[in-house]
Image (cartoon, rainbow, N blue to C red; front, top):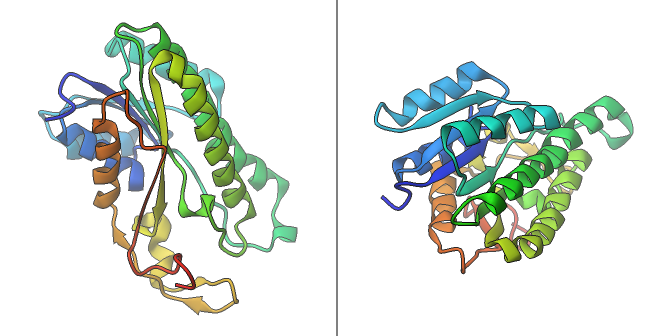
Amino acid sequence: MRGKGKFALVTGAGSGVGRAVALALAGEGYAVALAGRRLDALEETASLAGAEARTLPVSTDVSNPDSVNALFERLRAEFGRLDLLFNNAGMNAPGVLVEDLPAEKWLEIVGVNLNGSFFCAQAAFRMMKEQSPQGGRIINNGSISAHAPRPDSAPYTATKHAITGLTKSLSLDGRKYDIAVGQVDIGNAATPMTQRMQRGVKQADGRVEVEPTMDVANVGTAVCYMASLPLDANVPFLTVMANKMPFIGRG
């Protein structure tokens, strides 16, 4: 078990990609802190990990720096160190015309997707810098939207492009502390967020088409691979996607 004796934090661990990655890391022997807004969902993830797994559910609002600081205080008290942060918590807006998007929704998405990722990474830097042995790994959840947008997705796409810039900047800043920073860009993993793809989603030319999806467990496998590398090696960007989804070329 490659993660035995190591400690991880997964944000947005109550469902979807976050849950799949948390379960994969627990299966590799990591002790995993599970962060998210709904404690009941985090406790369900912990239950799915099994009685032998060491998990720590912590109700957290990543868009609130005080809540993030409280989360990391729990980590220090319970784990003593942090080897891996999977910065996953995120949300999307209903597909509405950009001119009809409420300002409150824009601010909410930026608050969770971008600000939350920064607050967690900043706290992880502080902890990884101070611990002995020094260092650790941060993996940000980007999205294929970090490369190419869907129609009517300005807030989500803008934040995911920003995550790419954050990943690059943190990767440079982390080198002096042996903190390796990378990003996984995911396309059409089967989660509650992608259920609409079974009914059809708007394409760039306005058509509505059903899109293939893949088992979300593949994302867990990809993240575990990135996490398995020694800190003198890094995967800056990894894309894992449903093979037949419309992304490469014209789909």
